[in-house]
View 1 (cartoon, rainbow, N blue to C red):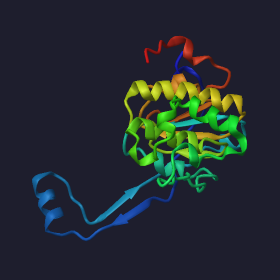
View 2: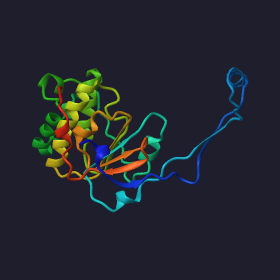
View 3: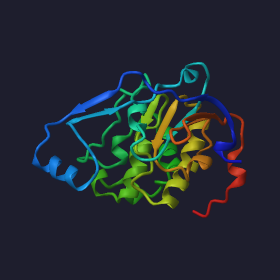
Amino acid sequence: MTYSDCKVLSVLQHKEEPLISKIPCDEYTQLAQSYFDYEFLGESKFYPYKLPKVLNEIDYKICVITGSSGKGKSVLLKEFPFYQKELRKFDNSKSVISNFDFTDKEDCMDRLASVGLSTVPTWCRPRNVLSVGEGFRADLALNIQSEMCFDEFTSTVDRNVAISTVLGIKKYIVKHNLKKVVFCSCHKDYIDYLEPDTVIDLDDEKVYDCRGVDLKKALSCQS
């Protein structure tokens, strides 16, 4: 079973008020229009989705927002009441490990291990010299907590890294009983491995209820 086979909690609705952007029509926009059958007067309208009310009525650990590019995923993500909680940034004058709170050493090691960042040489380097994949894992380890939003999740890493990371971070979320962790991405290949409680699919315009459903049985991870 995949997430799209799960029960539909609700159907997405657009807001009545659009987001409007205006720009001057210059020679370049006019030139572009001349090549195509398109009229542009300098104003663009986009009707974003409303945050489904059902998310305020249920308990969930993990929520995923997905959909193709341009559907309004990031705009919808901003509707979550805890979106304003800023992600922590690494201090590159220190090592990766030195940026963590060592008042709870076990949790620090647990965070790093959960994302597959388990080598001491990597811990001893500053964040800005890590590879893209290592940096993705480090940022996730530093910021994973309840009521946190992650935009462009797994967008910068190859799919094996993406899937192996979500397998570990799912275990961390369950072990520490985190609540309302929201991942937003155009990618869908990792979703069933993450086993979220809810999935908001902007392509289908539906909210899926995956609570209690064992999605991973239908998959075979090669990473």
